[in-house]
Each structure stands twice: as C-alpha cells, then as structure tokens.
Image 1 (cartoon, rainbow, N blue to C red):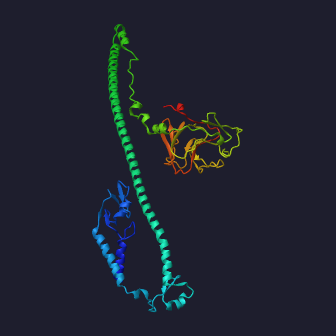
Image 2 (image 1 turned 135 degrees about the vertical axis):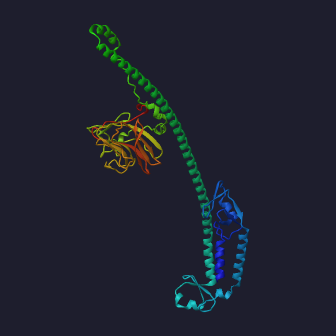
Image 3 (image 1 turned 120 degrees about the horizontal axis):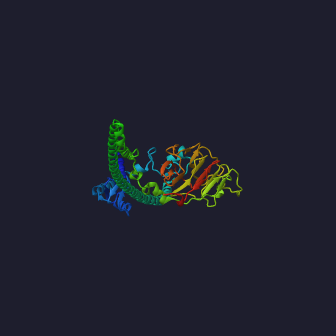
Length: 468
C-alpha cells in the first residue's frame, strides 16, 4: 500500500499544470516548473517581450525552455509501474466484501457503496435504492461522461483566461513602463529647464551685483570728494573768521562763491530689480495649465436662487435684496443663494477664473451635478468642494493646506483634474497656490457659486479680463 501511495504522489507531481494530464514531451523553464512542450508553447503564443510562468508568474526572457528527457523517461516508468501494480492485484481483493467475504453484486445509490447480498439484506440499506452492479456502472458512466465534456470546456476556458490575463498583465506593464518613461522625461526636461533658469538667474544676479558695487563705489567716491570740499570750506571759513574786518570783507566773497548748500551728491539705492531673480511667468507650471486647460464657463440661470441676478452674457452674478420673478424650475436653488455653471464635468482637466470681492461672504468651487437644490448649505455640506470667504477670512473645510488669512485674492483660479481627484485654488494673477482638495470623483460635477447678502458680484473672467 505504501508503494502504491508513493507512486500515486509521483503521478500527481508529473501532471502538466496547464492540461492536467501526464507530461508529454516535458520541458523545463527558467523558474524550474515543467510543462508539456505543446502546452507552454500555446500559453506563450503571440507574446513577444515577456513570457510569464503559468504557475508562479515569473517572467522568462525570450521564452526559453529546455527539454527534460530524464523526466519524460521517469514518467513512462511510473506509468508502467502503475499498470503492473494494477495487474498484480487479485480480482477477488477488489470484488469481495471485507465483512462477509462475498462478491459485490449490488450498488447503493444513496451511500454510493458496493454491496454483497448479505449487506443488501442488512438494516443499513433497507430503504435505499439498490441496483445491480452492471446497471449502476452504466448509469454512472453516463453521468460521468456528461461531466467530462463540460469540464474539458471549462479547462479550455480557464487556459484561455490564463493566457488572456497573462497578456493583460504584460499590457499593463507596458503601459506603466511608458508612463514611467514619460514622467521621467518630463521631470528631466523640467530639471534641465530649472538648471538653465537657475544659471541665468545667478548670472543676472552676478551682473547686477557688479553693477551695484560699481555704482556704490562711485557714490562713495563722490561723497568722499564732497567731504573733502566741506572740510576745505570749513577750514577757509574758520581762517577768514580770524581776519580783521576790512581784510575779512575782502575775502568773504570767495567763501560765498564756493559755498553751495545743495551740492550734496544723491544717495544711491541698492535695491534689486525684480526681473533679475524671478522666473519668467510664461514658463510657470500654472501658466501652462491656464493655456492648455482653460474652459469657457457660463452660468445656468435656471439654477439661480431668486435673490441672484445672472447677467445677460451669463458671466456675472449679483445678489439682490429683492427676489426676482423667475420661472419655476425643479433645478432652481431655493434653500441657498447658489447658482451653478452650465458645464457638466465627468472627465478631463479644466481651469477657470472668478473675479471675487473681499466683502460679506461668497463661495466658489464644484458640486455634484445631481445635487438636490433643496440640500442645506451647512459648514461642510455633502457633495460640495468649495472655498469660502467668511468673517473676513478664507475657509476650505477638507482642503490642504488651510488657506492663509493674510492674503486676500481679487481673482481666483480653479483647476479641476477629474481623474486624479484634484481641485486646486490659486491666487491670480500672482499665480500662488492657496489650497487643494483631494477626492475620488465618481459622478459628474458642475461649477458652483454661492453669494451672501451685500456680497460683491462674482464674475467668470475671460481672456480679455486677465492681464498677462
């Protein structure tokens, strides 16, 4: 029995992981796993660069595999041993009941057990369906046959899925590698640009330093000469003060001719020129975002609260103390003084600018396009991502970093990257970053604008409104 068990284990290990049959013309790949030559070739069919092992996913370069003739011979020997072992078994050992030492003649369908005549008459199988061995074997062969074909189909489907997933894995690796190369290239390009700008700025600073030092030296020399002249005049004046009256009056005219109270040279200012050390704005990252992703946002009057007045060009919204007579619309906000933009955003990158004020309170950002107009405007409402002006300072709950209160912007830029889940606010035209929301967007968004009483008008700026 021990030899039979060992032989069974060897046979299990000699199965091909792809077709689950005994290995035929076995080959070994780099990671050490063995397959039928035909199976591994079929698994790697149409692959060009990387060849994954169907078992451990190890990437085999160039699809190398080597024949394992010794394993093939061992499998044949094991098959012969199995056949010989089966032949050596005594038929009576397999066809006799161990309990009653009588030949099996029946089969219990409920317990799936072979029975001898004495077993069938026992109490354990009285009410069970019992059939003669030949009939039961025929029935179960038919059932087994009905399972084999679907199993073969499932096995083939599984093999194809493994092959498909292997290709997808390689495609994903290729996409990621291309993204890495692109990102690396962009970073290298940016680093080269920064190095060039650094060298140029340092060169400008050096030239400015030389120019300032030269002018400072000239200014020092001018004040030195001025000091010498003052000392000479002082000495002359003191000498003349000691002269007799007649001689003093004869010489005093020379002193008056040389004395000039406004002769002092101007003081040189050593302030640096801003263009010497600042990067050109046309090369800034934000300028590129503006140029590439700026969109034309229009306000949607049908969503405007009755206290909000939308301009004819749909670019400006003003708060009115008096409610307007407006058509009843299911999309109109009535609980909050809000108006939405007409653009629905479900993908891509978008940039727009809003002219704001520093009075009362306002809010700008985005919200879910499906947001109910009846939704309450709380301190942190669900479905809104916005920056507010409240109590003379900025607020942006959930954004990083917290907006600074010491810098008040008059024009704010908004950049939305839908796929990346980024919503950033910028102080324009200084182009300085204020704060950023990070979120996973799954539903379409719309620009939103909130206004409080006595707020200054909010205007979506155009190219003509934005000085470069």
